[in-house]
Image (cartoon, rainbow, N blue to C red; front, side):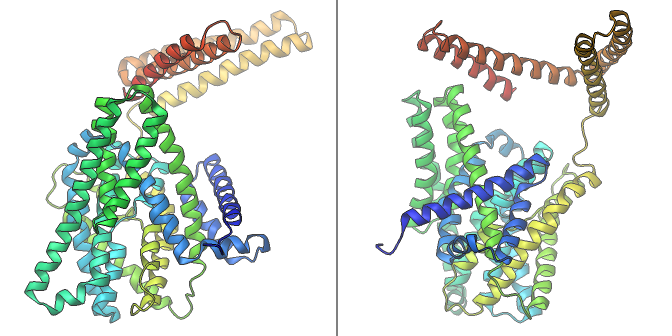
Length: 524
């Protein structure tokens, strides 16, 4: 403990956050998926010798540090944020595909990858099935971040998010069984199979019980307080407490957090949270998740550069091919019996089965004496890099090609009218400004303004016709106007408060009213 320089560790952490925030800001500015940008830049930083950053790279790529940051520090926050915002009604409506993918698809992928690694690459049984566990589940950190950045249909997003949240917990259970108990269970024959099934059931069930119980208790706790800073602290304790408690009794911490988050975000929000509290809790976790995601993906890029890929390219290529084949079979087979599930969505779910930081963290947590550990690290890191860069970058073009992200009917025409109207409004405003500055004749200016006003009138008539045809488009404009009006009211109250015209009590009361209206507008 005395050897640790906490001041230096804090400085390194701050540098990492600054780099991650800068890359994220640039990616968002150019409307690109920031997770992929972070992995690429992290890989470049890892490969290039930059003296100022050498201490940072050495510290971050330490296996124990990477594992702690990914699994203990950030994973509960990211899972909690995602499950907190996931409406139970959406999960219920899509329980068929979510359960089919999260359980049936994950188990099928696990079995296929394991046996193919034994048959094609000659891996030992534990080595093959540990790799299968690492690759069977989609990583929630990667999937949710990238799909949010490219934007997908709401129902498809719910299925993808639900699968990634639940199958991750399943994958961790399969990993632990494969790494530490599989050979023992095989040696025991039928009795061993029973032990394996019991272990599997116990870990999942305990995770569900712990998450459910804590989610219910903290939901009841929110009924006793109407104090959003305190309720934010409750949510932090809930997510980290459920994860650590479940892990301490050898249950699934991932499943515990997901269940706790869903209960707290749905039942807890309904019985004990004011609209102001909901808004502030969501905002807090959104900021936390953005920070965590940014740091995680930068760390993945840095970590990948520490692996020696020389003379392993054949192994890597075969492993990528095996994982892609297994994922395809698992997705199409598990969704085969579901009716009214668009075929194009199956392609997106298949190709969108991204791997990420959790796979790397689990691979690094293997004991040093585990047979084939170095090979597993190489192929796991390769799969993550391929998944995030190749699959991640091609998701958006695939969405467009399959028409999955197609705008609703009439939306393109609506956007064209908005753009044309905005151009004309700006032109009129500029003419009036220039006329005063350059002493342009009123007659000349008015002649041009009349032309633009006539065009605006024509556009307005087209817009009214469009609203009659597609009423939802009118609702969009009403929503935008209401939102901006409420923001303006909030700002006006701030001004009155600063000028000491109204008291803090009145300002807070009115602010809460405005916040409640904003929340209702968002929910609508």
